[in-house]
Amino acid sequence: MKNPLIEKDLNDQPIEKLKEEEDPSITFYKEAFDNFDWNNSGTISTKELQYAMRRGGQNPTDVEVQDLVNKIDDGSGTLDFQDFVLVMSEKSKEVDPETHFKDTFRVFSKDEEGCIPAEEMKFVLKHLPGKVTYKEIDQMIHTVDKNGDGKISFSEFRVMMGAFPMYIPDNPAPKKGKKSEE
Image (cartoon, rainbow, N blue to C red; front, side, top):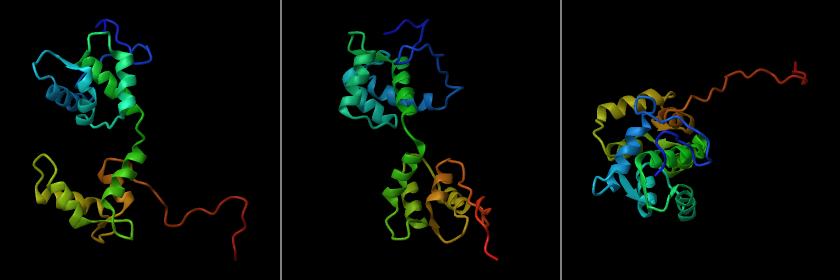
């Protein structure tokens, strides 16, 4: 375990301690960590790191986990919650949100139009952990399905996942240096 007065990232750069009020993912990480802290000791085994990371939304390879363990393990074979948050924060920086959106969209987009039928999206959302009502799902789909075709396009999906909308103007400005046809 590290000196609590001097927190450093995995590259030995000083960092500020993260607080739940400042980063809502801390609560999510805490739930993942607590699932593997079987004896409530405030630590988890480095052997359980990969499982805890997956529970926390990451999907590291065995090699990536071993590299992380080599960087953070002080010989005790355990890591505390602050170490876990550090690992998860570092790993989260590596994830390109656009790639994540595209990969997730491809899982659900099975039709040839490259869209997700609203009914399939309803089915998936209803079967996720947590209590989401059909009314909430309908409101979400109605909000993002801008053209009202009953299908979720990739740009609509991105917005539903929390990304900024992709703006494509109806009448794009002509490119400079090219003469317009008259």
